[in-house]
Length: 151
Image (cartoon, rainbow, N blue to C red; front, side):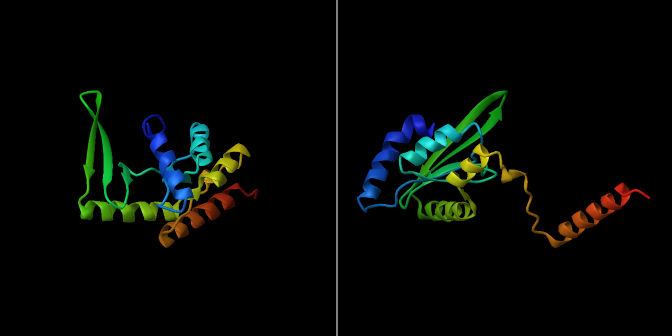
């Protein structure tokens, strides 16, 4: 949808950014084998792209002045979509800070694409933050290793 309906607008914003004005365009996506072609088009046009493992449950675009949101849900077997645009500073600030946090934790799409193309998909690596879960997993692995050792 972004490519079909907004790509020319994105390119104009990138052109302004290249002239030293504005902030350019940043885009967050879950980059996989199916989306590489599209992501490369955006990268080649000068749009900054980052990969995240899981997309938020709401799609949004945000600037310093307004936010646009879309939400989808199934109703009676049909997809229903809601669209909201707001210039309320509370919404704009909230979604700007949300975007910055997601962006900060994302991976440069060029790095992600290279990993996919080289067959080194790091998405299979799980990072466990909870110390209790780390201990449980470690003990389980040790137990499994002991059980698989020959007597």
